[in-house]
Each structure stands twice: as C-alpha cells, then as structure tokens.
Length: 74
Image 1 (cartoon, one colour):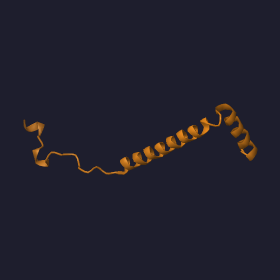
Image 2 (tube, one colour):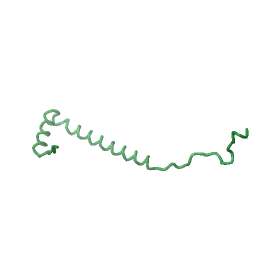
Image 3 (tube, one colour):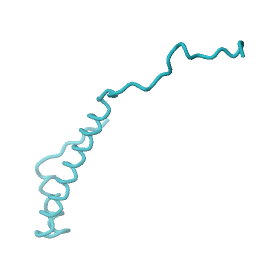
Image 4 (cartoon, one colour):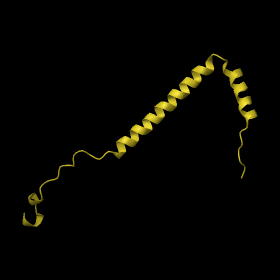
C-alpha cells in the first residue's frame, strides 16, 4: 500500500500550473465560486439533518378501536 505525500514543492507546481491555465484574474473568481459551493453544500447537509431529526408534530389519525367491523358477523 502506498501513501500519498503532498509536499510544498507539489503545491507550488500546482499553483504555477493553475496560474498558467486560468490566468491571474480568473483564479479569484474560481476560488469564490468554490467557496460558495462548499458553503451551500454544508448548509444543505445541515438542513437535511435538521429535517430528519425532527419528530412529527401530529400523529396520524387512527380510527377508534370500537368501530372495528367483524367480517364474520355480516
């Protein structure tokens, strides 16, 4: 099993490659979009957890026990 190690040199190479691919003006826009996407994703995850953890406010309506029909008596 190999372990992936990312060093400072790897990060520097990636930064230079991104700068060459997208240019200096586009990178802040990309990072802003990435940050907004992560924020929205975390918000959606939190809301989903809130929805599933809530208990129902009203129990489903159940017919009274004395109104049961006996098919044999009909």
